[in-house]
Length: 110
Image (cartoon, rainbow, N blue to C red; front, side):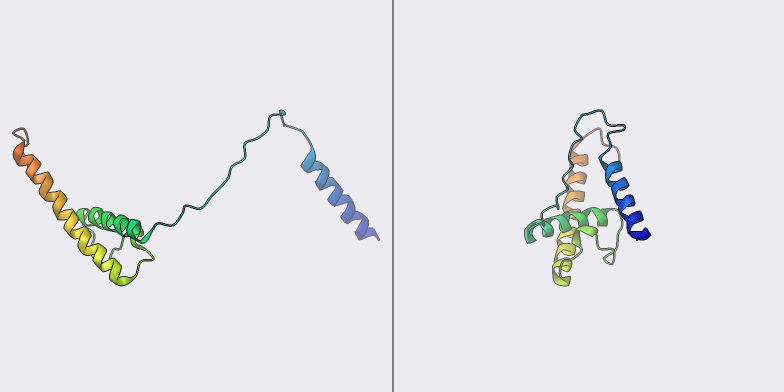
C-alpha cells in the first residue's frame, strides 16, 4: 500500500512538474524535424566517389585509403571509381598546368 501511494505521488509530481509554466514566456517553441537524407542513386554515389578519389589522390592518398563517399559500394565499383578518380585528378592537373603556361604572370607550375 505504501509503495503504491509513493508511486502515485511520484507520478503525479512528475506530471505536474512537466506541465508547470515556470521559466516559460508564453511563446511557442519551434519544432525541429529531423529527416534522413535520401540515399544517393548509384550514378550519384559513383560520381561522388570518383570526385572523392580525385581529391584524395591529389592529397597523396594511396589506393588503400578509400574515401568515405565510396563506403558501401561493391569492390569492383570502388576499383572503377578509383581509376576514374585517378584519370580525373590527372585531367585537373593538366588543366591547371595549361592555365599556368597560358598566363605570363604564372612563374611556378602547379
